[in-house]
Image (tube, rainbow, N blue to C red):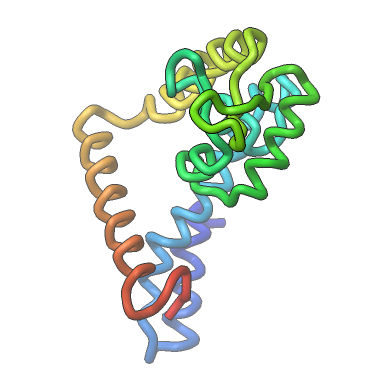
Length: 175
């Protein structure tokens, strides 16, 4: 059996519907397949730390801010590209674990900020080391030139997709 299932699918569509160009699947299908494989490869350190999907994103966003490691829910939402509702659920889980706290904002007494606890800083610092080592291991098979090319192509594809989402097709609508 051919190890390239995406190419097989493209071949099947080309045979069954020669009036269509199925070659975009060679890129989009592989990206989707790779995203699933990356999730499987990157998840173990977070699961071992008993973090749910997205919990590390909260910790990392706060840690990247630098001391005092605080952000509002809205700022977390923007940095993580998720809704404030998703942020609230994640923050509540992390509060229960003692990794973050919620407190009154020094800038606006009506507002609340989320901040890393010392335990949250320690866990985040340990996990980011594991995470970056894991990512480096995944990319080890690519040379520097291939990595730079892939970075450039992925950035270009992201810009094109973001441009499309804000263009005439509407946000997230497929053609």
